[in-house]
Length: 464
Image 1 (tube, rainbow, N blue to C red):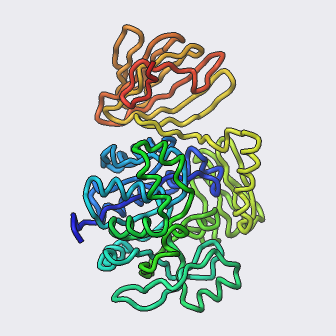
Image 2 (image 1 turned 90 degrees about the vertical axis):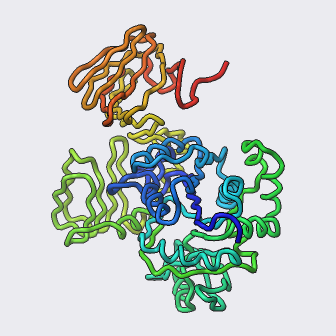
């Protein structure tokens, strides 16, 4: 194998938040949720750093989630090259996404060994050593990783191992998600759960795509414009496109803790529980004669229950969802109904990431909004103007540099300022620590599209 022998990583970080609604939303999918100290996406970055340098990690995402990617990597203390963030104009499943990443890696690094990971899976860090050891197969095989099943599971596809290799096996067969009876049969035959993780050389991958999914190859070679490419490329998964057709596929067993956290019950199984089997996140609790429940609410709220068992209770500032644990797959049905109603609660969450940091919506009405805004050190918002709303800023912590029309001044904790409607203004953080402010918006119209940008570091000024 020619080129750099280190392993490059591709992280797939598109997708929408439907199965963990209302915790996750389309603009705040599950990979970016911080249910514990770090998000699933951040965990994936940290795992990839065991096999790749930060400059060797490529993230395939979309414009909506771009700033989640940048912000959450920076929160870990790393800065990823901007060219390593690959934006899909639209989701066309895993094969085009991976092909996009592979071609970019090939341009920069030449023929390379590449590992592919989903950004929303839970996996023990120790599994990365097994993945690293699989490199001896990756120049001649498209390597996939199968999870040793702990029980019959109808939510995963299965892989049947064939002939033994020096490590791992040739793949005998891929099998679709089964019913429970077939899942029991698959496990008795020694099948593994299909994890959706891969390792291969760019050269072998491109050759197999040319053989079995030439329409994907042709789409990428037809134009230098990624928008045109994704308009024409077929919507196809890597399993359907090449893995189920190629004769050069191997599977390596991962006997490690793994979950795709596909629903609230999977999340319940993954997290710590009390002596009665209750998993309670964030909130204060008072649970009487209640067992085996998953409960999430805000830290300032007391959640009390009496005589309830095996329920999912998720309470956010704008939505409450309650269902039996065994019915949590039906959460997507709620999401579908809300989509039909064009309800914004499918898309928006309380916390929204921006290239300069994030804001959390604390309260709103038709004529006011209250936000908690966090600005990263050295970052600044755009120079902007609002026609229909004024803004009052109160500094909670850190130091703020404020531009208000022709004036420029600094504010510290406990100080405040007022921005009238029609005034050009900008907020920035000149300090070494995060800046946190409370913003109160007042006006006849307080939606996000009442903004005119005059100068912006992040390319958000419309060219005229």
